[in-house]
Every structure is written in C-alpha cells, then in structure tokens.
Image 1 (cartoon, rainbow, N blue to C red):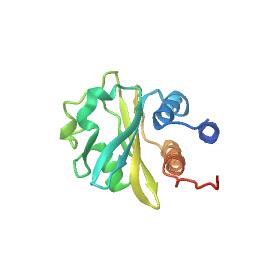
Image 2 (cartoon, rainbow, N blue to C red):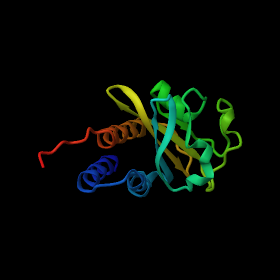
Image 3 (cartoon, rainbow, N blue to C red):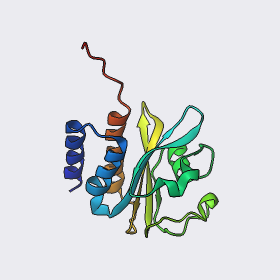
Length: 168
C-alpha cells in the first residue's frame, strides 16, 4: 500500500499545478489517509533563523497565530526535527512531553493522538518540514519512517525546485 501511495502522489504532483495548501490537502485526504491524518502543514526555515508556516490543511490557522513564525532556537518538535534532521514522533497527545514546555497549553481543535514532524532536506540541509497530526496513536516503525522520508524527498524536489526558464 505504501508504494502505491507514493506513486499516487508522484502522479498527482506531475499532472497538477498545485498550491501548497492543495498539496497539504492531498497528503491529508489521500497519501496519509490510511494513518487517519486530520491535519497536515508545511513550514520552512527562513534566512532570519525562524520557522515560518507556508501551508496547511485541516485546521484554522487563525487559532494558532502565534505559531505562524517563531525562532529556530525555541525548543519545539518542529525545531528539533529541523536542527537535528530527524523525525520527531509524539504519540501521547493531547498531553505534550515534558521536553516541550512551550506547548503545555496548546490544544488542537479536533481530537488527536500522534504528531509527526518530518524534515525536508535540500542538498543535505534542512529547509522545511512536514507536520501531520493523526486521530490514532501511531508507533514508530522502519517502514513508516522510510515512507515519510520518501514523501519529504518528493516534496523537496517539487516545492523547492528552481524556476524553469523557457525560451518563450
């Protein structure tokens, strides 16, 4: 099933001119649907050493205005994924782990159990991340880890591709 989900995403990206919000929607409703994902977002590292929200699907971002841009040195799952270049997997929501005290008061508007942050690399450097939230408690495993990394690699190629110069 995972191979078919990757192929479906590749075909969709190749045949559609999608906004980043539409990509988040496709990931939520198709690619990650078998994991009961109800929210997906993409954030990027800025030149100001901050993390800025780029796109999302499944939640009203106005509810999280303070998280639209924040310093890269804050201790958060997103910043850990980016600075340590690793998947961050939290599967005990709505309770946040003690290592993230800044999130103690943050609640999602829908019931959630797991949050996964996947770093997106370009030239072996973290430039962005994909975040997903599920209604099910998911435990880390090698197959899902590889699946998420493959999706991140595809999005790196698609979202951060150089502009193509045409002779027109």
